[in-house]
Image 1 (tube, rainbow, N blue to C red):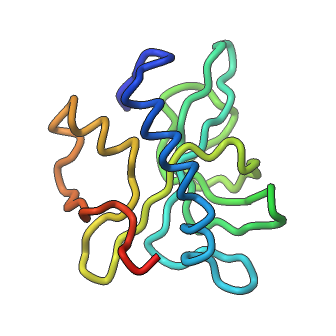
Image 2 (tube, rainbow, N blue to C red):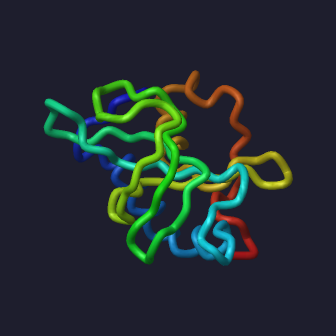
Length: 140
């Protein structure tokens, strides 16, 4: 996990773009009953225990419970104490979502706005990712 200073302009812009495109992502990547399609990820800010800032964790196999509430399983092992363990299911609000991503049928990663910022500053973080350009599918 790579940390960025609060107020980092590149990361803040990436989060803003991801949140601005989130409605299109949800419209295209959720099944009618609200469950996410395969190869779909959300990055969620979760409050840390004993710290003043949120730490991101990735949720997959998530479901939209209502317009503002989601439930998903934690993909990664948290780097900080957040009261959750890997694979644990947790609920989160739409406001906690800081990014989204999915692997297209072409194998490329769409979205991943914050990951793109991380890779730009830490090349090793991008190993194994083939980013789609543009990040938002053209037919959306």
